[in-house]
Structure formats: structure tokens, C-alpha cells
Image (cartoon, rainbow, N blue to C red; front, side, top):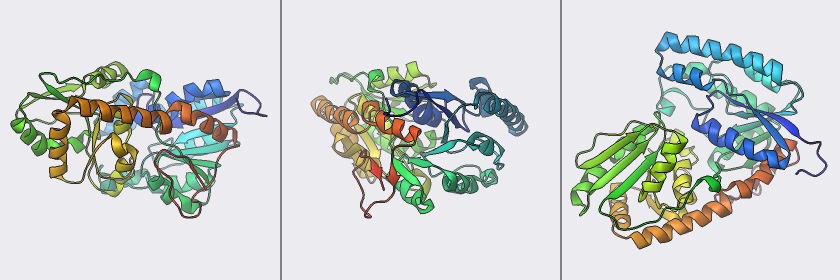
Length: 381
């Protein structure tokens, strides 16, 4: 509980996503529910309902416009009906996919704004490998408007914080968090098949394409059959690899993690990718699975000695072979990763900090003395 605060504190949790979108689920919904034990009542108000998000994702252009208009009307009504008495709003990047600030103004009116950002959201169009017309969303303008008005900025990494520091607002670096109660530790054995795994979304599955020649070569050289389990995105076509594609759900994610020998997190080296918060690697580590990741952004600092960091194709291939042939090594690295999650990326470590931020009593300014703190450590300035 927060000493001296009037409890419970009501906070609106919102973003321009649906309730099952990874960013909303990881940065708002899951920690928000756990904050109840700290005297924070967080009400989830994403832009889309689950059904609206499904329709928007699968619709063509005009269908997307209609789905977005319906979602905006619903959220506008909910903000006006349910916002009374809320002392703050936790906004994950923005509320509306369009360029207008109407919803953002309604949500922040007469209450504190905690602005959470876990991507380089100021980039748009080809900078994000997205549609070339996505600049029409006004992403950069919205980031600027929200950051200038935020009572507190919560950045998912120091790379993001360094960009946002120019707005001079109170800021704390809080990584994407893991609730360890939901992650069982994998028992590694040298079985007849080596299982590689990847968890993500339809928009991030493109990163797997860069591994196609590496995985095919690894399978050709391996003394055991190779299987690749892909959850949440389209699996690439691979010669010599038994590829399994599974739709994302909590159950399918946990099932896949229980099968993985090695967790993969490839990224391309772009400004957009450098802003990512390495959540896939954190999930692998939580389950005691060694992570094999691209040396992009904060990945190397997050994984550290709990896996392998690949700077080029040779590193990827060497890492695959080294981890595949030694179950004891996978067990040792997995134990290191699990401890690292417990110490630096867990709910237990960070929920008290988030509760203080929600109540307006936590965090200072970034940066401090121009020095960087280790990944997973609190950074205030």
C-alpha cells in the first residue's frame, strides 16, 4: 500500500489497441490487475473491444475505417461515463489511431497523465517497415503532445528514455514485466528432436525471414530433426525443418514455451527495432530457456549471460549448434535467465515502483549525471 494515499486510487488504463494486443496486455492490463494489492484500481479502457480488434485486423481499407469509427464512438462514451473520479490515466503510447487528439484530450482532462511508451512511437511510415501512408496517423505529433503534458513518463528502455528526455518530464525506465507465477521452468533433456521457438505477432513475424537460410543450413547440418514452433505470426517456409504455426492465446503460448529448447529473437538493425524492449527474450528466460537474439538495441543487455547474442549469420549458426548439442548448458543458462528475471524484470521487483508513480509520489528526472544504469535497474533522473 502507498503510505498516506487515499485508497483505492482509480486509474484509467488505455491505448490504441485491443485488450489482447501485446503492448496493452503486457504494459497495462497484466501489471494493472496486480496493482490492486498496492491500492491501485486500474480500469482497462483500450480503444478496441476484442471483437472490434478482430474485425479491424482482418478488414480491408473501408472496413478498417468503419471499425475504427465504431471503436472511437464506444471509447468516447466510456471515457465520459467511467472517467468520473479517476485520478490518473495510464496511456500506452496513444489512444486513437487517427491524427486527431480528441480522445487524448478527453482522457487527460483534469487528471494526471502517466505516459507509457515501449516502442519508438515517434517514427512512422517506412521508418517502421509499415505502410508508407502511416505517417498520416500523426504519430510523432502525438508523442510530442503527450510527452510535453505528461506528469510522468514510463519508458520501456533507456534507448526510448534518451529520446524522451528532451521533454524534461519526470521519467522512470520500467522494463516490460514478467509475472513469474505464470511461467513454469522448462526441464531440458537431450531428446530425439531439437525444438526452436518464437513468440510474436503478425507484424513482427517478418523478422523470422532473415533466419531462413540460417535455419535451413542448421537443419542440414544437425544430427537430429529440427522443429520450429511459431506462435502468433506466419511461419516461414523452411526446407528440412518441421515448422508448426499456432495462433496466439495464453494457452498456446505457455504450451509452446514448455516445448522449446532454444528461444529465438531475430531483429533487423533499424531505429524502429532498436526501440524494442526484448519481451520475447524475457519470456524465454522466465521459463529457463536460453535465448538466442540479435545484437540490436537493448537485447544484449537484457540477455547478458543467459543466452547467446548474434551479431552476424555465423554467430547465429554457432549459437544454434552449441545450444542444441548440450542439454546441461541449456539448463545452466536457463537457470541464469530465470534468476535474472526474478531480480530485474519481475512483478515483485517493479509493482511498488509503478504504484508510487500512479499515486504521483515516485520517480525523478532522466538522465542523471549522464550515466547509464544496467538493464533492468530503475533509472530516474
